[in-house]
Amino acid sequence: MICWFCSLREAQVKHTYGIDMYGEVDAKTTSALTDIAYRVRHVEVPRCADCHRRHRQARFASNLSVLFFIVAVAAAPAIILKWTPPLISGIWLGLAVGLVLTALVSVKLILKGIHSLRKSHAKYPEIQELLKQGYRFGQRPKAGIPKSDPSRKASEEETSSST
Image 1 (cartoon, rainbow, N blue to C red):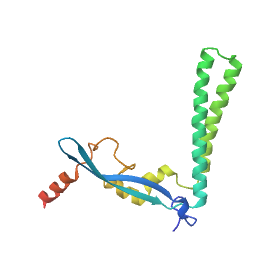
Image 2 (cartoon, rainbow, N blue to C red):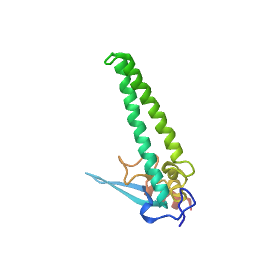
Image 3 (cartoon, rainbow, N blue to C red):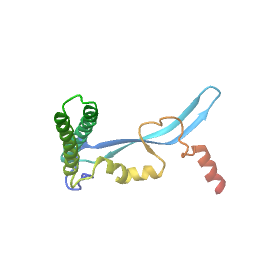
Image 4 (cartoon, rainbow, N blue to C red):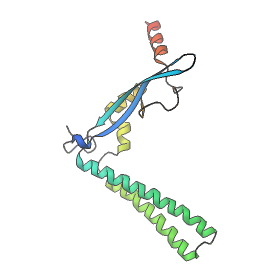
């Protein structure tokens, strides 16, 4: 099987990208509790070792950009409250902002020519089909039945009454 992310190399099972999705949520309320039933699907997107390595590098670079952003934000009170001399705070802020931009550009360069993990959530055919069926990302519903999802019983009643 070919890697979905680059469409060039052979995919390897140990580097497959897995995504859990849940759907067909239904609730049954009794006097004391509510039972929620749902189905979980594990979607596997084929991926080669090179794309796996590049995705890990991109995640590391994006995590660094968040860290550098926090450092840049921390420099603002240091400048305002004059915790350090203005020259040191300015260097600190400038360096942090520069490193944030460098890390973000690095992510784009690392992922150049391949699909990102985020793009697989929107473009992979099996995921698109499950999204059309009302499935959502995750292993289980967070808090009850989402308002946009009709219960299975209501859906079955509508289809049987329309035929």
